[in-house]
Amino acid sequence: MKNAFLFPGQGSQSAGMGKELYEQLPAAKAVLDRACDVLGYNLKDLMFNGPLEMLTDTKYAQPAIYTCSAMYLERAKKQEIAYEYVAGHSLGEYSALYAAGVFSFEAGLKLVDKRARAMANENGKGTMAAVMGLTEKELKSYIDKQEDVVMANLNTKTQIVISGTESGIAAVADAVSGKEGVSVRRLAVSAAFHSPQMEEASAIMRSEITDMSFQEPSAFIVSNVTGTATKNVEEIKANLTAQITGQVRWYSSILAMKETGVEQFYECGNGKVLRKMNKAITLRPKCLSVGE
Image (tube, rainbow, N blue to C red; front, side, top):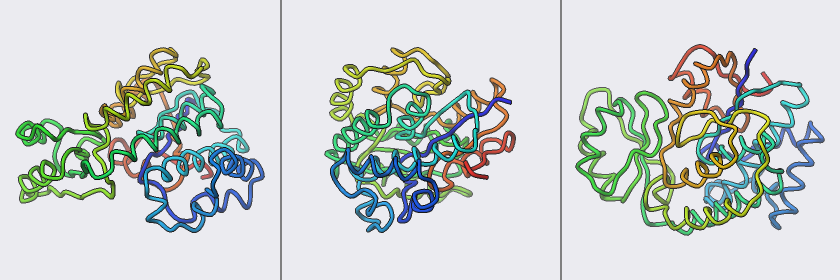
């Protein structure tokens, strides 16, 4: 049976994340202790106790989520769950690459920390909102009227995250909010991720990713920006660089894995964000949590 591991991204963080694993699984404890050493601050206290405002801050949220997903991966190893495909939602793609052996936990954490700091520097320059109830084609007519707004995440057929300036997002929200079955929810972010506004952060990470040694993956990587699977290292690097300003094609990624014969998805990380999305994309194969 073909399995796929899915790793959540920013927005999956919560106070208490990873605590049960830390207390019950020595290998997961070792992962978090190692992360504290690498980062040089008490990530464990932040993950377990918050405050949530600090845990939601991009420069802390991304290392916390990456580390927590690595802890869940240790649970999967203990349960001897094999996997042939990996994919991660935005930041989660770094966890997916670690799971596939492309780089070590420490190397990935250092890369994620640099990504988080580069993206955090864009604070105050934009925002994001989730639009529910419109397809990509239906939403496009509204987006096309705003030069400073893009479709950032194609999460499901009718759940799309838009990214851009405060005024642009507000204009789109006002235009679609009165339509039957349509709702708009502002996201708790302080920058326009996956948009051209992230070009400076993308340039920083392009240099970091280019210079870093990537190993051939043990599982197929399904890229956010292409929604297709690959094991080509150079292609993986190029996609990871493009991801910061590019679109997250989660809907396409899940369907692509289904079409290759994946029979079971596992969410490997904190929360239920991806399980909820997957249920809206396809009822079969079902997405379980690592540990179920």
